[in-house]
Image 1 (cartoon, helix red, strand yellow):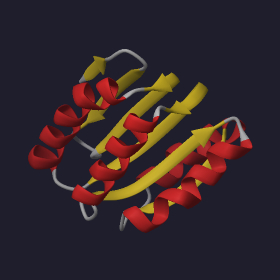
Image 2 (cartoon, one colour):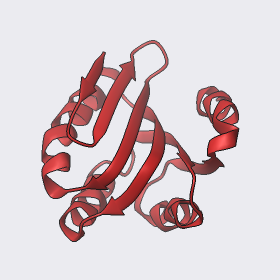
Image 3 (cartoon, helix red, strand yellow):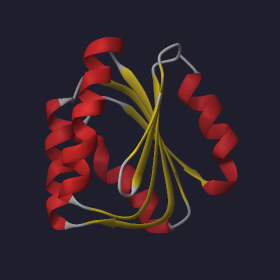
Length: 125
C-alpha cells in the first residue's frame, strides 16, 4: 500500500513488516498529523515494524515536527524493530545517533550510495 502526503511517501509491505518512508523538503507538524495515524494503524495490524527512512533533498524538521517525532518515538518505543536511515548529508547521520535514546529499535545510517545495503540490512533478523 502506498500513501502520499505533502513531503512524505509511505509504502507498507505486510509480508516483511517494512514501511518505506521517503521524505523531502522540510517536515512540519501537519505532516506528522497526517501520517502518524496511518503508521499507528499498521503497527496495530502488523505488529513490530521495520522502517526504511529515505531522505532526499531533505531540509529537516520544523520545531513542531521535531516535537511530534519525539512524541511518536516515545509512544512507540517498543513497536519499531529496526530503522535504516538513508541520507546524503552528514547531519542526517547525526540524526541516527540522536534518535537512539528514544527507541528500542536498532538504527543504522546508510549513505545514498549504500541504499542496497540498507535494503538488505532492514530485512535481516
